[in-house]
Image (cartoon, rainbow, N blue to C red; front, side, top):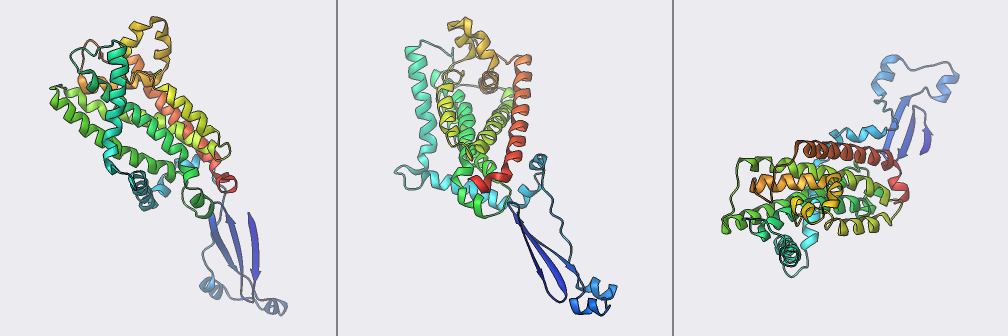
Amino acid sequence: MSLVSETNATASTITRSDDEGTRSEQAILPAPDAAQKGIVPSESQAGAEALPVIVIRQKSAWAVFDLRDVWRYRDLLVALAERDIKLRYRQTALGAIWVILQPLLAAGVVTILFGRFGGLSAGKIPYFVFSFAGMMGWNVFTQTVAKSSSSLLGNAQLVAKVYFPRIILPFSTALSTLFDLCVSAVVLTLLMAITHTGTGLQIVTAPIWLALLFLIAMGIGLFTGALQVTYRDIGSIQGIILQYGMWATPAGYSLAAAIQKGPKLFWFFQLNPLSHLLEGLRWSIFGTSPDVVPPSPLGVAYGVATAIVVFLGGMLAFGSMQRRFADVI
């Protein structure tokens, strides 16, 4: 923090600057020569010329939960999200078609590995459609973690030179992830119509499962993103964990099939909160079948509690570390 004082014949101006921006405080003081003569400005003159006094205090880590600043900067939030979507597919041969091809290719690979080579089945549900639904939920999780955690380093010039609520950067990635999710949902609807795969009233719970996946991912992304400002290798470690985490999470296969093939790993899948949320998502889409069972109340409670704790912990960690972003990024 720097403190600069300038005094003239009529006023004293104090300017403070820090990572939160630059503001001024001005108070009316008597001119030196007038003070020596015992002449002091009247209260009416001082009140007419005085400016509002702004008191700057250090924000606590809990201030990150005050989202009024995010609302005031909502135009910047939307602009960053639009930029992220445009830059991702600019100067590509297929352009926005990649939004459709990526989940289709991922579901195809999973179908070959688990459906053909692994001998797993999804009952009456075509395995490609079954795996596409699971991969849609998994992509919401991985894309949110990857984008939110790299948002600070990807906008280092803004962080270092311009004041705005830093939480806007990871939040803007959520809007771009929502765009990909909407495209995947449309593709899944078409696949279900082509294969005559039905659904039921439980489909109304699908946004809840997706929201819980998003909360866990955002909490992890906020925490690792704040750490990456100081420790750049966090991004590499996170990428490895996400890469192998897909095979350890029932995204391309059902939880029942995983337990049947490896009953000794039952405890591992039960401890993974994503297992319960992805099973809940598939149940909301396809209903109850031999390979899609309703999520257990205990598993749902565990997934909800994990999502809330991880998100709040990530927000608090981000708020406690954001003051030093401009100094070390």
